[in-house]
Amino acid sequence: MIGSIKGPAAVLLAAAMLYGMQRTTPLYSDITSPVPVTGRQGERVDTSAFAIGVANVHLAREVTASSFGRDRTYTTSGVWVIIEAAAAAKQESLSLTSAKWLGPNGVRHALSQRLSSMPGMPGTERLEPGIPRPMLMAFEVPESQLSGATLLIARSAVTPLAEEAWIKITDVRAQNIRSTVKLGRGNRSQPWTLEAQ
Amino acid sequence: MTIRQRLLAILITGIGGTAAAAASFAMAVYDAANPEGVTVVAASEPVDTGRWIVTVREARAGPIPPTGIEPPEPKTFVMVEFDADNRSAETNNVLTRLLAIDPPVPNLPDPIVYLARDGWVAGGINPGMPERMIAAWEWPPALPPPRTLRLLIGSQIYKRRDNLYGASGWFDLDPVAAVELSVSPAAAEATQ
Image 1 (cartoon, helix red, strand yellow):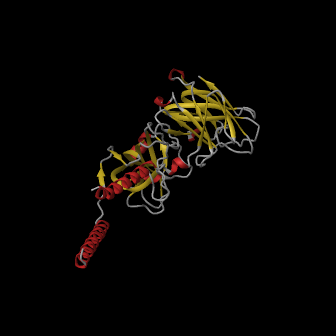
Image 2 (tube, one colour):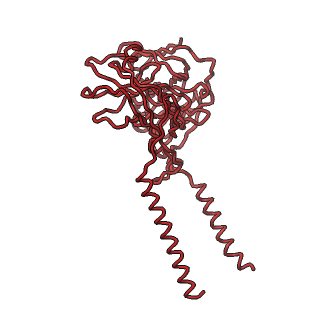
Image 3 (spheres, one colour):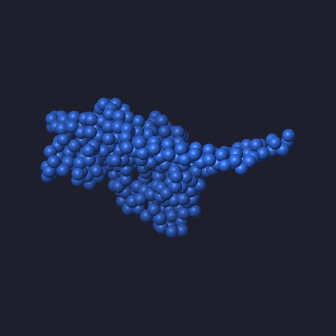
């Protein structure tokens, strides 16, 4: 009696184990995803390759920026998020080229490409070890994705197992949305000027 | 079990297997020989392409691109206005290959996609922020601008694990729909 059950029971057990293993195998993208280093807005976040601190977050309906000597107005169907930060490399010179706005619903918003040539934007400047440099970032996000968001900063978008700074953005309120933020060119130590109206 | 029974079992499984393989092969050959035509949708009808919901609005031809700045040497632009809503979890460019002119026009460069609201070249489109855009093809000067335009709308499929790495991603699939538009040359002069 027991002998006749043993065979099918073993097959069922093996099938259940295989099914469980198949369902719980981590995705390739999970295995090779960057390692998060968490922090908050207003404090220094240290990864092994770079350090970054996010100071101000400005919200606006429109951004005015000078481009080729002319003032241009950039509209958005959501809200402009302009972030002022400072970053420094640690051991070797590097560029921080990847910044993403991770909204509370899990959507990753990439940097707005329309202001990407502004001085201070990620990728426009190389960071040298030990010399902190100001850094400017601009995103266009839906209004519902403002509060409870996280800023993700890494050396590049695809760096398996490299460290990525996950900075919790705390100082964002919908009533602080300005009508216009004006970006201008600054000097060597502060590459941009920012005027909220 | 006698040898006779064993032989019979082998024979039956062999015949069954061969029949299944033959049926599957025949179906594949039949499908390849009789491709299903793509469904034709009307203008302003939303099309679910997997990653995007695309609504093709209208087409026009004219000398002024969506930037509003006429190029120094006269050119003809064929412009298609459409709405795109990103349904994925990440910012993405509207692939210029999402909309394809059918039948293909020789020597036609890829279109440049502009935002309709301010005439700037469109960058990545965020999920939750549907945008109206204009795809502008620089029409070869040797050809007259078309009166009607048939566009194929491509689609993409999400795979949680792809066949090579087991990574998740979006992969191109066959066109899901075709849309036929009449190209208005007068509207371009009037609106711009």
